[in-house]
Amino acid sequence: MRTATPSTARAINDRLALDLLLERGPLTAPQIRALTGLSRPTVSDLIERLQASGLIEAGGEAGGHRRGPNARLYRIVAGRAHVAGVDVRRDAVTVTVADLTGATTGTAGRRVGSGGDGANRTGDTGDTGDIAELVAGAVAEAAGGRPLHAVVVGAPGLVDPRTGDLSRLNDVPGWRGSVLRELRSRLDGPVVLENEVNLAALAEHREGAAAGRADFVLLWLDDGVGAAVVLDGRLRRGVSGGAGEIGFLDAGGGPLCDVLNGAALRGLAAGEVAARVAAAVFPAVALLDPGLVVLAGEVGRAGGGELAALVTDRLAGLAPVPVEVRVTAIEDNPVLRGAVATGLSTARDDLFGAP
Image (cartoon, rainbow, N blue to C red; front, side, top):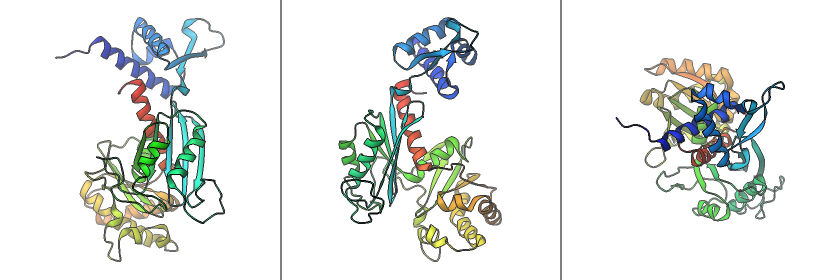
């Protein structure tokens, strides 16, 4: 049996305390001791070490009647790192910048098709301009001069896990094979590209309808159609990044991307929409037995509980295994939420040490 070295034990204790401060907010030394089970000297050393490294700081005291070291509150130094999440759609680029605690510190947006200078001219539908310039400009505006520890870009398309770039170009106007390389040269900080539906699934797993579930399939119904697969708590991308690309499947009347997008479903009765959705997700249910399907994207969110119930009934007559269908629980942009969460995970692992 191998035991942890003192340095390993310190790293584990540090990460434990930092995660508690992220989860619960400012804590006193006695509270940290109670929550971790660590001794008084260990917590004292830990606090001193984390303050010296610039990761935590003292901020106020707990209880107006209490004074002294035991009442002092410690908190994460929020400005120690900032990350940017980027959602690139066919018509718009949206950016959120967050500090190390996850609090939003800046936002920005651009219309794709607004012109080469990147200005946000909402009435301009002319030339697409330079997509790399649009993204870089929006990130710079949202960052407000703050250095970025990580930039995570969500975009349609197959992202090759080996190269980190698109293995085939998407249909975002102006997107080309050099966009990721150009973004990395324009932006201060590492830039990671990820499929937008995968990021939505990560957000749903972290804080949405799939929170606490190890296995689920997310079906994205919007102007594009796709899916994301999470098994054993891990996102599955596939060897080539194509896991979940159900839009290419033949639906009888054409590929699923043509019969399940928002335009194709508009005006259809709820029962017909549910029939199409159930037929689309049935192969994943029969093959993977995920136990949960989350309906996301504009169409999935708009269908609400009624669509989820109808799809559940349809699948009950098709699938050999039980499956629950839920609607996304994230009201705002799940792609952006997933991108920020991914960037924060990177920053925290780099600064706090691997969990």
